[in-house]
Image 1: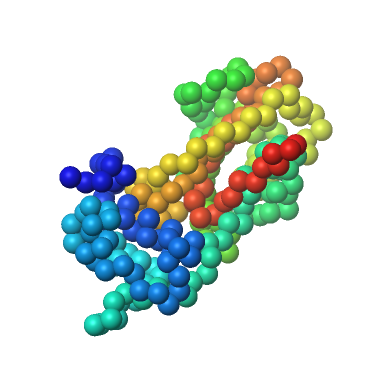
Image 2: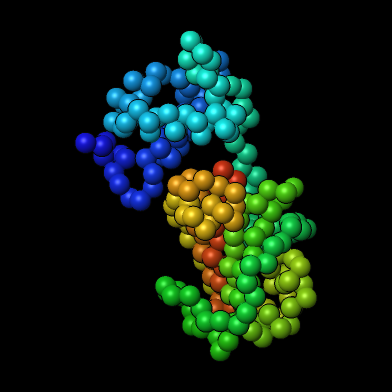
Length: 242
């Protein structure tokens, strides 16, 4: 019987085992220069078959985290700690400042008039929306997929800037735009096949799903963003005394 922590949810077991092992290496639970536990020990801990452990180790080897050495075992190699260059901040002004002046590479996936997605619980919809779905990347590394829903009148007013720049600084600098409600939620989930393909990840890797909603003084939703971030690209900082 498989361990409860690896109960079936559609994700291959070897990916789950690889993720646990990867995190132990990156967090120095297993230190550089040490050997991985034996295959038999890993089989017993994770309650999986030998082939599952072998496949997990192959993934770590392909990522340059370990190196099998004949007759000795599998050594943990030197590695850089995971970089987390983006903070998920907790105020609108901080969020705008985070992106101000930042012009990442933008890859367009979709660009069309559409309705708001389901599940929006605050504000009221505008008459029409324009949707931009695109990939953001820095220095050649893709870090998020974002789907923007912008009230059509606002999109039309700033169309050129919104197609080439990050949306929040463009909107925040409009003196005629007054935001009365701004909400953000975040959940941690696992990467599906589509996201893995778009962000160069492995299915089952952790990712963060963020929804941001802004309403004007009439409580009309003028901006909604559904963002999927690579789990290794962001961090959440909160001042608990604020």
